[in-house]
Image (cartoon, rainbow, N blue to C red; front, side):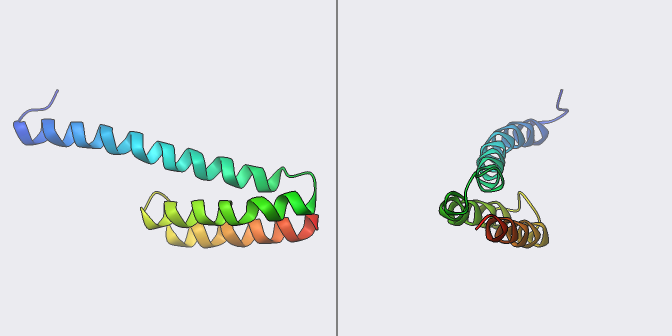
Length: 84
């Protein structure tokens, strides 16, 4: 229970932002999973650009750290190349 008007507003804002962030993070993880679980190299390559874009978008919005995004993208590239 918030103690003042400002705390109540922050509570509402945080809840709204948490829901928005959850959607972005979920979409990013799904895109990454499509690349890592692809059966063929062509399938992995076709999903790679979408996954890279989702990771970049999450980093831009500070949902994940910039370095974590770079690390994830590097691992995705390596995984897609190994399947080819």
